[in-house]
Length: 179
Image (cartoon, rainbow, N blue to C red; front, side, top):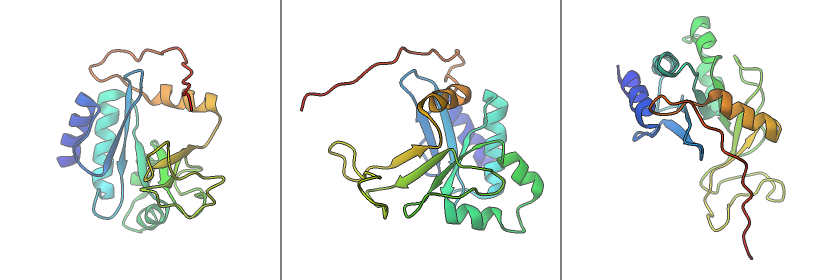
């Protein structure tokens, strides 16, 4: 019952007050979300209930977020059925790995988002993987597995608008800053 209540909260407000859920709200006011499968956040059965509720209400599958090692351990367990894996496989995959680029994690063929830095922690070369953003030293940094056009398409296909309106597409804007 708790995952369904969390799903209701996220759908209605596109925000979340609990750990283990990562709402993503974009500038066009559309939303998508992910749930976290890891020790202390959400069990696989709870993630399934959450995923099914989000899909039932929005027609979209949320993302699944976890550390790569933890995801492999959890979904590699004999306690996770093929049916459960097939439901989760409909979601997009967001993996955290601060040491190296993630590998494919069954039941997915590839990851969609890779969190390579969290709270400023990153064991990758700074020249290729910056840790901070502007004056934010302990930033969470992510990489999309695809082109800029693929990223835009990815979010458009997975977005819903809180309140039920259709997502609007805003024109591209260029941001500049004087240094």
